[in-house]
Length: 255
Image (cartoon, rainbow, N blue to C red; front, side):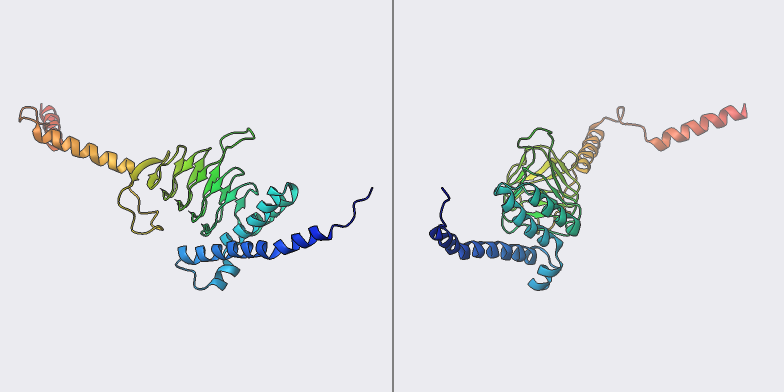
């Protein structure tokens, strides 16, 4: 028997539409406000709406993610592909992205299917949230709220970057990062945790270099050991050694 037209169901769906649209526009407005807050070059909201590819990529993703959650596959992938063509930013429809996220410049950013980006995160160009497994399981990283990932940084595998942490430009992160920490290098190493904050959330380039710090510590240790050495144990200056070698060669030449 053919089911009759359910007018009540249609009316109930229509009644929920204003609330849905309100939530959508609030999320879009959050994206614009995030751009204004995190980019000193942003002069007004209209400029952000018309000329910021990071914002456009996020808007396209919010649509494709909704379709993905509704059980569609091909359509959200096509929409994601079109957004990548237009913005240079690739976000899988399955990725979960919070509110107030900003992708600055954005060219080359890749966010994998099972990745999660928390509220208020800031990503720069070339950032990759990549996977390390071919199995269909959780294989991409989770960024807690207010994380900053510098240009060209790569975060790999099902790891977590804690709230408020910063990943230095060009770093490769393969292990969990504690909250309120700073990691730099390849592979990324912890250089600050719960310490004095950087001068600005955008100051992701002003980070210590752990390799330089190690070499400086070695130099300081050598200087300390040399100062403690007795005269008999003190190392002979290199200049004195060279002069002695030259003198010996001259003596052999006169014989």
